[in-house]
Length: 294
Image 1: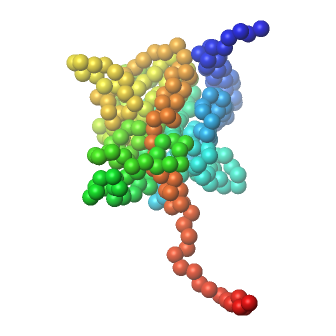
Image 2: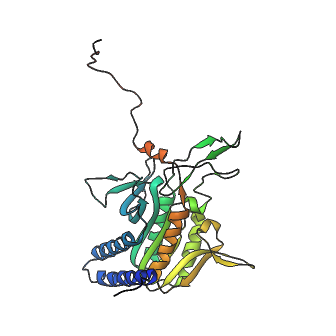
Image 3: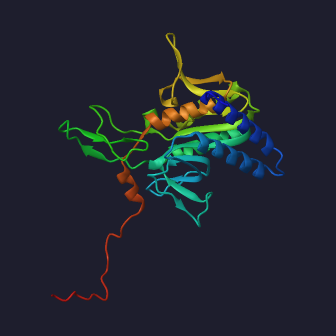
């Protein structure tokens, strides 16, 4: 009889199962079915391990201006708060307002040049979407304006302190998090990092991924490196570059980062969701019949 329980061992077993599922997926007869098998496996493992209230889906992320991201293999969203618009109940043709999306992920068999470009492009297509962020007059600090924010899973927005405001383009924890997971990488880690840093230079740090990992242990993340320190940071916005790591359990490493994003990340107030279901500005009355008095 089991007398104790190890969460670390449990996650390791699930990580081993994910590796096995990726291996099994390679037996599929076409590239499309290989990818679909691995995407399903990754989504299933995330559902088993993420906190209640975080949904795991796939499809497209949208904003209230009508912009649509490229198709995402994995979308983590606020399951109890975020509306989801599905075409004919299809999981693949599902559209998620960006205000309720926590993270997006890509699943690849291997990461070569084409796959690296695809990962960067798909994450950037989500980051270019604009969450509805409305500046308001501060109650606590007269003559100052702010943009409120709330933590994921909370329906309550808060007024930030002086000099603080919601800004998805300058604050790493105000962004939708972006990651990729693959069985292996055919590009060298150095080449992959070079492609990411060139992307940052050309397109901007705010659009760059937070983590790329493989089931054989490679992890690539943004880092701050100078004469005094060498530390991993959450976003390219606050990084000087990207760094390569090797870990024993990449799924556990990914889950640790996702847990921090869920606990510490912020988004805009839930009033933003009303922007997606607009009421008509004018209504025409027809066949009007008054209610009799008495």
